[in-house]
Length: 391
Image (cartoon, rainbow, N blue to C red):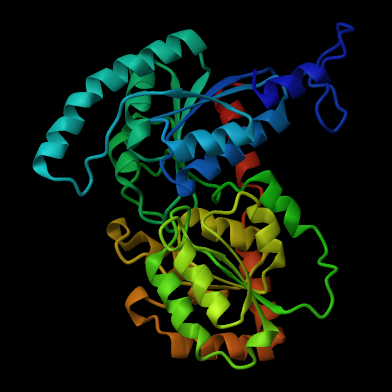
C-alpha cells in the first residue's frame, strides 16, 4: 500500500460518512477514479506526472494512481519517494538509434502492448494519461484497443515523437505553451501549462527570512547534469570579483561531481555540490539567480515560483525544443538565454557580478517570470479529466 492509499484510509472516519478531503470537506459529490499515468524516463516527463497525480489525490483522497513505465532506477526512486505504485512494461526508444536498434525496439512493441493490456485488466483504470517518452507508447495503444479514455500531456513547445505519433488516439491533449505546434488536432488541444509538484509551489509562498546572505547562484543541468555548464562554471571561478560574496548550489550529475567539488575548493568559493538534489523546493527557495537547461519542466517550476534564470538550452534536444521553450521567456523580458556553444567563463562571471550589484533588475525579471507561470496547471488537467468522464 502506498502513502497516498494510507492517507485516504486515514481520512475515512469509519462512521459510514463519505471520505473527508484534506481541507475538511466531505467528497460526497466527487467519485473516486482509477488512473494510470504512463511515461517518464527523465524528470522532465516524470515530475509533471507526479504533479498531476498529487492533484488527483487532492481532488479526492480515494483516487487510485498507478504509474507505468520501463522502471529505470531513476523512475523507481522518484515514484517510490512520492508514494505511488509502479508497474513495469517492455519498451525501447527508436529516436536517434541505428537501424538494428530500431529493429530490436520494434520487435519489443507487441510484448509491451500485451503487458499493458494485462495491467489495464488488473487495475481497471477509468482513464490512461500519457506524459511522454517511448515508455508510454505501449500503454496508450493498449488503452485504445480496450476503448479507454486517453489523455496526453505535452510539456514542450515542439511536441515530442510520442505525442505526434499517438495524438490521433487521444481524447484530449494538454499542452504547456500557447504556441505549441498547430499540427496537433486543435479540437483536442487545451492549453493548461506544465504541472508543477506541490512542494515546489509551496516554496513560492514562503518568505525568505535570511538577512545579509551571500549572493546565491543555483546551477542545474537537469536530472542527468550538464557537462558544458559544469565546465563553464569552473572557468567562471577565476574571473569572479569578490568571490567571498558568492554562494553556489550546484547539481553536477554523476560524472562531474568530484571534479566540480575540487574546483570550488581550489578557488575558496562557498558551495553545496551534489550529483542530484531530492529537495529541489528548498534549493529553488535559496537562489537569487538560476543557471540551467531549458527543459519544459524546469521552466514551469522556475516561473511558477518566480525566479530569474539564465537559460542554456541543451544543444542536442530534439527539434531544438529547449531553445524554443526558452525563447518565449526571453521575448517577455523574464530571462536571459546563452547558447551552449557561446558559454565562457569571462562573460558568465561578468553577468554574475552585474546581477549581484543590481538586485532591482533580478526582482523585475523574476516578477515577469512569475507572471508567465501556471501554478494551477495540474488542477485544470484533473478538473477537465473529471468533466470528460461526466463528473
